[in-house]
Structures are given as structure tokens and as C-alpha cells.
Length: 160
Image 1 (cartoon, one colour):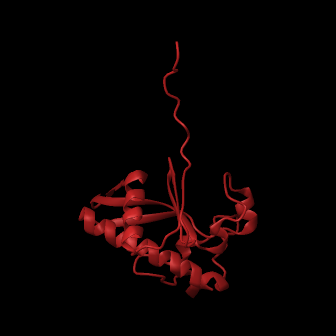
Image 2 (cartoon, one colour; image 1 turned 180 degrees about the vertical axis):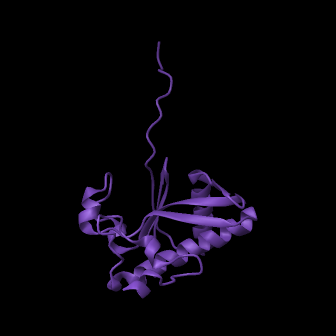
């Protein structure tokens, strides 16, 4: 099983990055390997595009990849039929290297804009894109879905 843990999906992604964050740290089941490879290929496109645009090293940090149905049920805000359960979704942050020890997060709004451009170009698959205060969700469901999971900001009261 150790060799699977180290399995490279793309140049910058290994399968362990997509493991479930349940108590057992469940690995992606073998029947879902084609799905997680497809997801990693799409995120690799994003990685290369960000590096080319910003001219800096890039790191995509996976917050949540595969989820067991049990773990998905315990995840606040998770959809009942979440694409995470099929290893087709990732919640992540994208960082740009500042210097040898420092990375800065690219704001989720900028990452979302870049993904949308890559989808328009046909280099990334159409799918679900959700923006949150903590980062971004992307899934390669094959159909368009967009949502904003950030809390609504209360503005000044209107009226008299």
C-alpha cells in the first residue's frame, strides 16, 4: 500500500494529497483512480497557467479531496451527492512563492477568474466552481455550476 501513497498523478500532484481527512486518513479507493487523475490533470493545467501568468513558483494546497460517504455526512455544508465522494472535487488554495521561505496566497477571486478563463479556452474541464472565504472548490463534473459560499456582508441599512 505504501507505493500507492507515493503514486504520482501529474508532475505536481501525488495521490496522498487527495486522501480523505477522516480519522483513518482513508486513501482514494482504487476504482476511483481514473477520477482523481482527471481532477489532478485539471489542477495541473491551473498550476502551469498561474506559474506562466505570475512568473513565480506555484503551490496548490489541497484542503479536501476524496471524502468517504461517512466523512461527507459529517462535513458542514457538504452536498449529499458531493463530487468529493467520487474523487472528482477538490477544495484548495493557490500560493505564489515570494522567496525561499515565504508563500503568499492568491486571492480566491483571482483563482476563480483564472479557472473561468481556462475553461473558456478549453484547457480545463467545465465543472463546479465555488468560492469561499477560505479558498476555492473545483470539480470536473462536466457541466457548469457556480456558487458563492462566502457569508453575506451586512451593509448599511437602507430607508428613512
